[in-house]
Image 1: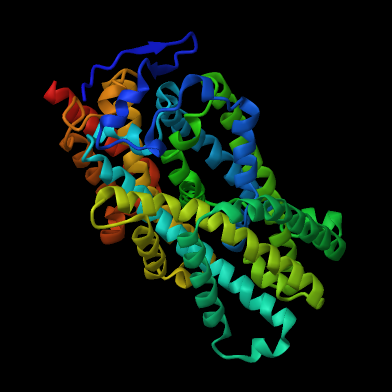
Image 2: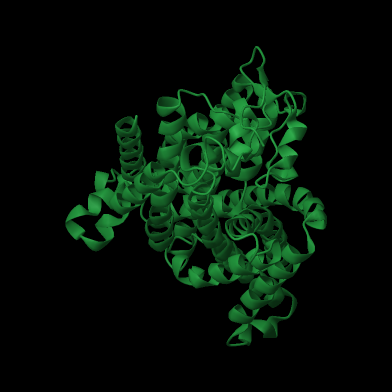
Length: 472
């Protein structure tokens, strides 16, 4: 297949091939990886905004804000940190969304320009491994919710010593079984359950107001002047929360009608949707410190304290269903495809899904969610380093090295311009990860870990730019 396939560019700067059917001859092409024709790019700014509004209303988002309160921030401070962190993240997110929106290609194809067609597996596997971690975390949350739900139906269940582990195992196996059977039915469940997460949070907020009063809710935790040693890693954790999505945002931005639509929709919706929902979670957690004498940052643990079995059952059932549907769609499909694409003859999608599930256990999510500090500073800050490194390579490669120009046909030609492995991109990625994680090994450099996303992003970007310039 020739890389020099003719293309056209419209007035919005969107590029498409004149004869896209010729890509079908390529060994690295399938329908999922095909560029989206311009006429099928129909996402308006409203659609792009709706994506982030829906994603923001989730149990992990609740736990992000509540963990900040659990670490000693006021509710106002936690909401402000979430707003600032997501406002900062919007910049690299939009920079990384531009290329896929221009050429209509998904993340797995877009990275071929920077890493090479074979080297692209480095970037997709980084995204896949982080998704495996999130699979484990979401599965543990769902298992906890199932444990409490069963306890609301059968009180004797809570007396079972290993009930929580059994519930986790049941929920894990349910995720695996549904992953292997397909996602069609889950889409209807997700559409039903996702709004109920917001309804449940509103109900918890009303409960908090009725328990401590509106003024008590606002004043139950006075504004505290947190030090930079507290704020900086917390800000990195907030950025690390959506950094994986910022990395693979091309899977969504390729459907945008124009650059203006994806920039306006995502740029406005992400920070404010996260901040508003985080504020609700933060004030609820702040109220629990007054009601129970200690901040209850885990929403499943919070609803388990309710005296009404009906309220507990409805709340935990909502968490179980919503977590099940979101977990499979967001945290199984991506890594399973990444593993399958890396070794297509040895790993099928089903095998990749099983590998994802077992790696999700390997991260020991029960430890990451044991304390708010573990969730924030071990998982979110730690995982921000590899995602930040790959993101740094992609942004600098597209905007500076290639000056927004990519040969669309060559992305699908194993013998073309992007063949093999681009050592500069791989080296830059490893350098970025090393700098982001060096503070774990050497305490004197802990500051680099506290800003792992930034240190990894900047290091990878400069190393890639320097190697590309030297090669030129």
